Length: 184
Image (cartoon, rainbow, N blue to C red; front, top):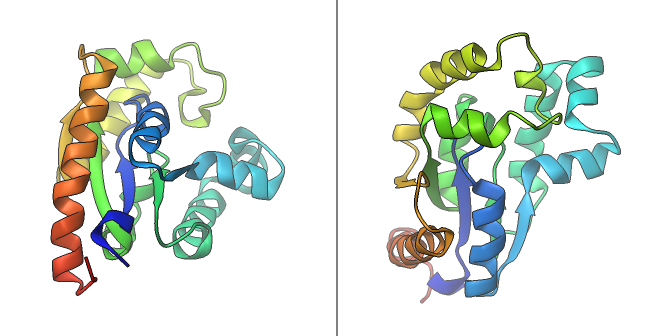
């Protein structure tokens, strides 16, 4: 495997642009793109909100672990990870063993603006979504900040964000290849 085949994992809070950036970055580097949430919905033949309602969040988190372990190709793939995926104990280390991890970041105001019209976010299906976002964000922020290179997505042209992600991936994929004795 060459350094140019190393997977890219985009992590971060909901509404930071992971799915959109993954799709656009995949066009630049010629990788396939997968969204962990969409893949789980497809495998389960039901929406995440339904999985949460019938099986609970713990069951969904177990499905995320299975996806990371064996639900996607080991090379030439960009994975847009669900917002809570890396929060689970051990998941960040699992991703780091599989490829480059980049964390997308946005302010709470931007996250609320980007998610407020969505009906597909079960964690925000509450009376006060802003309070829920603030609480989840406070819990998850330390993990996100240690996840990998942090790229801000607030008030920046999307092409700038994509370019930054691709440049960061290229640099870190070379480091990953050297550290993991990958040819390239």
